[in-house]
Image: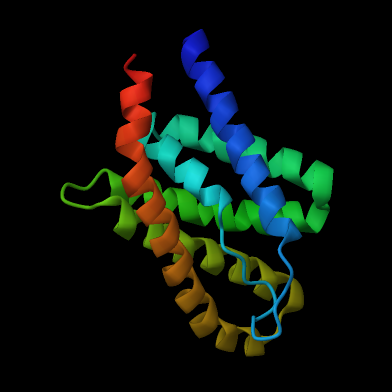
Length: 166
């Protein structure tokens, strides 16, 4: 890996970390379901996936998760984040290589996958089937947040790639 690429990965990990922190500061609104977040950090991970590749996206995600857990999380938040990230990035990496698939679709699948990964971990801990009812709500939120992140990547990716070519 070149020094330039390493620097860009560091920048993307920093952006992902800043977005994670920003998201942690957002208040829970009365109409929001507990545990649902915007998934803003996935924007930086998805952008890294498209601009640099799978390995680099994994680096950005792991760096962000570890530092976020140390700074403003805990062990359980790290485990939840890890479970969601593994499922999300695995699905995104598999789908983004398919021809004709755009950033929006990949991001939506990743958003839903992230929520499924976290729900499976929660089911493992709580061992109560009632949590399955939460699946519909999490799928809808993963769809919406995935669209948002995918749209941002679709708009900003060409600009980032243009800067990187200089």
